[in-house]
Length: 140
Ligand SMILES: [Zn+2]
Ligand SMILES: [Zn+2]
Image 1 (cartoon, rainbow, N blue to C red):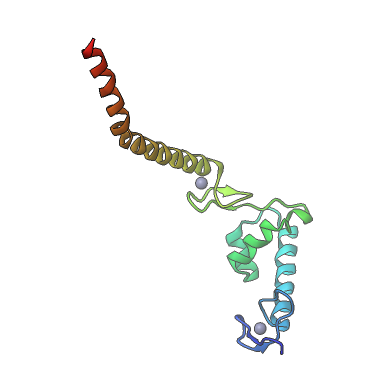
Image 2: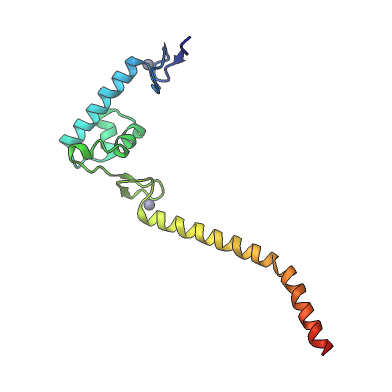
């Protein structure tokens, strides 16, 4: 028996085909909306994401997905969207290169701190060895 699903868009019960998340009606509507968004960008290559949302009524997540899928590049437009950390316009990924760099440094600092902490825990063993050497020296 096929599994029934509730469409998260309209609430209608449907039998999902493959990985379909929405009912066929909503899938169609979404494809239409995507085409509308892509057409708008093609006609207004300099438009911003916020403008696009206002003009087409598309959701930000849909636009981001279209950017990631390269749908705007297909019509010759490189669409930018804001970095999730500082809001600077970016073309790929979630963050701008500066935020990526500062996050990478942060991770590095964290790793260094962790390494230093585990180094600090070690000398107990090394210290005992050192003690033995000291004793040998004293025996002479
Ligand atoms: Zn639906
Ligand atoms: Zn940034």
